[in-house]
Image (cartoon, rainbow, N blue to C red; front, side):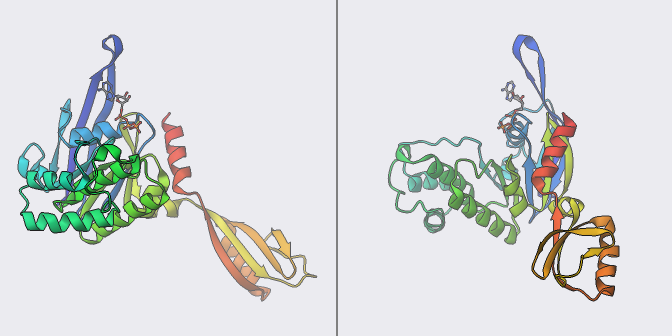
Length: 304
Ligand SMILES: Nc1ncnc2c1ncn2[C@@H]1O[C@H](COP(=O)(O)OP(=O)(O)OP(=O)(O)O)[C@@H](O)[C@H]1O
């Protein structure tokens, strides 16, 4: 059974002078348990609208969402979800510890378990020393980390995170990615939005690209990276006296007895065959590929 199932989700807003804004057009999406799904899109693509619709914070024009087969409108489904909004804002006169106690009590957690989980999470997110200080004195990154902490406290099965790395420094970003991967290992489902491809490449199993309210690409990160292979950088040891041309490919760089070749995909087998026949030593073969950023940019450009 899918952890998240979105069917035919649409949202229209009324814009200026009663114009219609199609913020989300007929989204169908399934995310499995143990899967990390990256929802990638440029500014204004419809990521936050989707997440707010899924969370029931906006009423869809049509369509529905279920969590482990239970319609999201039912409290039982919502209890299984941890949600991080795009710009989290809390009761800022509370400290992080008190706030987690409040969140845990809303989920009916046992007090001793809540205390234990809260300590573990605050330490993990490096908020322990600040736990009793009012959050109004927290930095942007600290508030973001409290946002993540409050999704973790009741140990839900599904995490819906709107730009979880936003406002964090590189250490904070790395920590969030580590936590997401741990959740995956524990069989949890994580759905998060971002416009930063690097975040997706490092942690996601699958990625969906949304542009102008439509899902325009959906694939595994592995497939995207594999399909982006453009050629190979081959390093060979060859005598300095040898011209070093194999299958018509000339060295792009030479230094002493080593030479580097750029070999396009379709010429690779022929090139390696000649290298082999000439008895030259292969020092290194590196794959040259488009990265996720190139993939994302080309999709967004095509969709525009
Ligand atoms: N309450 C609203 N009323 C009218 N239009 C809205 C409303 N909320 C969002 N929109 C429009 O819906 C579209 C999608 O917005 P959304 O906030 O979902 O984008 P996003 O992908 O989350 O962008 P960002 O990365 O900038 O946060 C935009 O054109 C936006 O202007």
